[in-house]
Image (tube, rainbow, N blue to C red; front, side, top):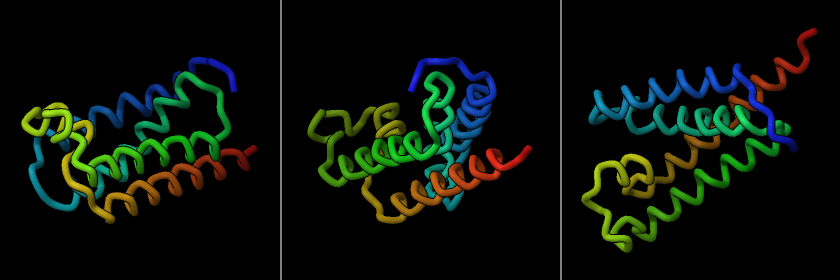
Length: 125
């Protein structure tokens, strides 16, 4: 693992950030807001990490999944309420406010997708 800027991953991060921003600000309900957004957010985080750290895909995937699962389980214990931030829009947007098993599945599927894409890209000449 070494620090190294990767403009391809950073470009992916920027594109996904814009998509996530549009989802968060334009959609209030539905599959895209609640499930697809969670699927994309782990890919966004993966791209962000790979933008600055040369780390193998599996390690990056496990790191991202650990972060996502930790945040989701903190929702189960009502972290925002404990920090008196339950009415803070930005905190709710970043950390979420309700625990859902479906979110864990979306995170897992997002990382599986990233790892499959990485595997395909590694086997190309």
